[in-house]
Length: 375
Image (cartoon, rainbow, N blue to C red; front, side, top):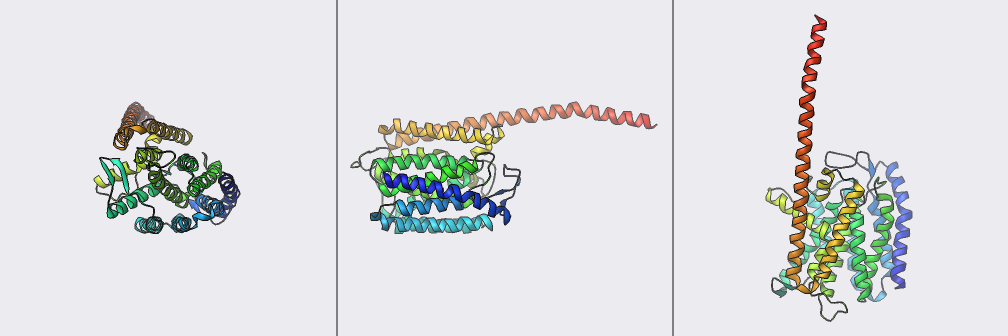
């Protein structure tokens, strides 16, 4: 317990004191995120907050993890370093989607192939249990890549990605502490400590953004945590066994994960790259409804907590039923948001047209009056 608390406190302190220095350096070197038509901020803001998150996380993890976990940890640390350099280069110079994806494949390959972290059992999903090695590798790669990108794509308003990452790491960290998985508990709580410190500077109005460096790191760590969670929680010999472990893992990550799968699916159906930018994420819908950054973060966080509670309460129903309920509820919620947004935008457009119709005769009358006076 002591080393877990030490890791969380150390990560918090490192990130908390590093962020102001990073902000100053970013301002001096003009390393800003420039506003454009897709982004919601209107002023230039430093984007290197992920540097502080990484520093706090990696140092606290390396110091706090039990020495017996050295072999596993070295590959996770190597993958985190790959993601760090990938993110920092993209935040400063901007990388193409293809190069970013290649870097993510390398990082995920390290934790899956060398770290031996794989999903090799579906735990009864659609009647499937153990799966072949090839299918295991493909499923694990897909899971890790989607989760890694999910936090990157949900990072659209102040405090959202950091708050969701804090929630997921606290949940995973608590579970791993309870079942005696010390290394994973340290990793989770170290990232939690870093994110708490970062959020102090990131809540609206944000003084700094985490950038791809931070969001990709959060995604990578959560992919490691959820895969390990599925393997450990789905094992009947575990102290706290969940029959529907994959469904619960999905529910813990529901907001970023479901939103990413939905957006990727829509873009592919539209014959576009899944990484092509647009304004179809859930936070864009909520912005269109008039919610500010703090309200969007609160709503998404509350919904995520609700899904976790629901999956936990239904855990004995089996993976297929619980996952089906979770997915059906998520589809219903996003459908409701889309419907309300559509009505809201339609009403706003009609109001604009009415105002234009009222103003147009006035303008014509004014021009006519000016013409008469001129005569």
